[in-house]
Image (cartoon, rainbow, N blue to C red):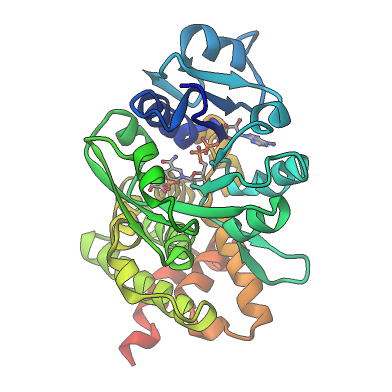
Length: 350
Ligand SMILES: NC(=O)C1=CN([C@@H]2O[C@H](COP(=O)(O)OP(=O)(O)OC[C@H]3O[C@@H](n4cnc5c(N)ncnc54)[C@H](O)[C@@H]3O)[C@@H](O)[C@H]2O)C=CC1
Ligand SMILES: O=C(CO)COP(=O)(O)O
């Protein structure tokens, strides 16, 4: 409708496309939003045709979400600035490796009062070795407020409209209901909390633990072992928040972004799948990503590296043995069986 907020989705991968499907449908239900949703697509050729043209004619992202139709009001735009410059709401959903350069392209080119919502899981590794929450990087570079959305939301299941929950950590007081209207459906239920830092920490850190779950699967251990990895991983996630983000609430770990996302990713996610194959095949993570994910990205190994570099700098490696072992296994410094030694000797048991 005229005068309503314009929404742009920055990203069009597996999750980017699934959330564009939801947003494209929801905006038409409320006068507060314009009916057209722009989706920035990192242009590539698929079977000789531009992906944007394929999406705009077939309404299917044939590469990243092939089995689902996007609403026709979702328009694929190859030019990032063109897609974002008039937006009142920017939904960020690129793999975290690409966020910084995406933001640099947008710097100074978005509306000053735009409301940001980041669905991206990972950290920004600063040149001096510290880490930053991605939503804070968005806020710093674009000079806007950025909320976060994280949850137990494997994109193929969300796109298939299988019931799930999610958590919004809101940093734009007064806009909670508007964000909920944008995202919630009968099968995708939203809880809004104000503890945005912890929501984002959960989303980033659980991808590291998911690699650990994949390693024990690859080694042929059973469900009890995986449950131990999940539990010890959760303990390290909570400790990480306590030590580095004081003021984070324990209750946030019991929202969908916490235990629920940790559980679904350790059973059904790409990070788990890649990590299991890493153990079984002996191939590197990079090779497996290329062979198994068709352009999608696993965020866990890179996040494990970011956290490792930061912990080393903070002289805190020994406080987070599971995160550290997972990074060392990913880079080939430890054999995968080191995962079992790590959980056997974990300080939680002393
Ligand atoms: N896929 C899932 O089930 C879920 C993913 N997430 C998170 O959402 C974020 C985005 O993930 P997905 O949408 O699944 O992406 P994806 O893993 O499907 O990645 C592919 C996307 O990366 C883009 N890309 C490739 N090179 C690029 C470049 N140089 N610059 C910018 N973009 C480039 C591709 O065009 C494509 O859109 C990640 O942080 C992920 O952890 C969160 C919840 C669920
Ligand atoms: O974040 C996710 C589910 O909420 C997706 O996890 P993977 O990236 O491991 O598939």
